[in-house]
Length: 361
Image 1: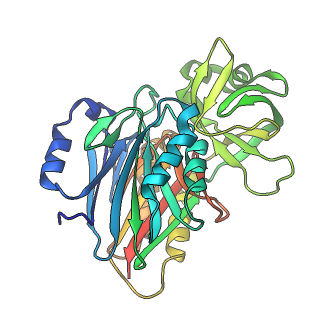
Image 2 (image 1 turned 180 degrees about the horizontal axis):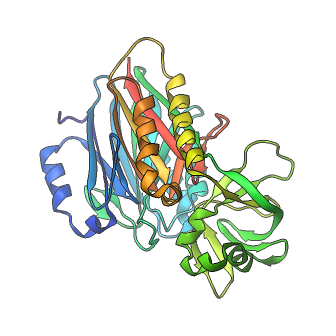
């Protein structure tokens, strides 16, 4: 299985960032392969969800060339230029898709994807996610040169005319409460809603749950949209709070002037949305006939917190809807990257199940 056209994905617990022995074993076993991985808020393998483990898949492509790229991201302000640096490493003839894994805490996912897409040809499918740390939001890692490191972004480019890639995403969340206007923000930091301190308003909604911030905010993400838009909103998840500035830091941009409402969901809504995401991904696949397929799921940690003991039902719905004989692997994240809910360009999502299917003619 070892070759330059072999992709090894390793999704593991945050604690493994201090234990490099498993990754040394992987590198020794697959010295020529492209090794990619990150910390998680739960590892998916088949129909199972585990913690304190490594979810691993080895996929050898027959007709597809692979190229790995890595870069640093020190602060969220560096996110766009980090995306541009990755694009320059990956740009080349025959590029069809990019699968990307990023530090989950020191990044603005919106700017990262924007920088990447700005330097790549239109039509390149970009999927992936932000590394997780359970619901602690303290430390994440990404494999760089086979070693788990913070402040890193890694991506693999897939090249070749016989590669087939399709994706799907769905949220299953509904708006509730009053609609407010974002009156002060900077990038992914929200300061004011309707002229009032954003953190104070958020605490009012959470009530007794406010003591668990930022983790408890995963239960009530924010839906944002342009005032003149009738399309589906973009969902944003809180990554950190600042008590002194009364602000909230999100995984992606929260632009001034956008409308904002809180969101909530049900177990059935999340499970059904996962089934819809894999159905969307499979509907875009080539009808040429069955072929071995790799299915990668990236779902938000907030969904897992809501589902609790029913989490595996979400993952089971992915396996049930995947192509016959497909291998399924994935992780729970701090942000998901996939084409838009309406099939538009790739972007950052939160509280969303995203599914990517790779196969070859």
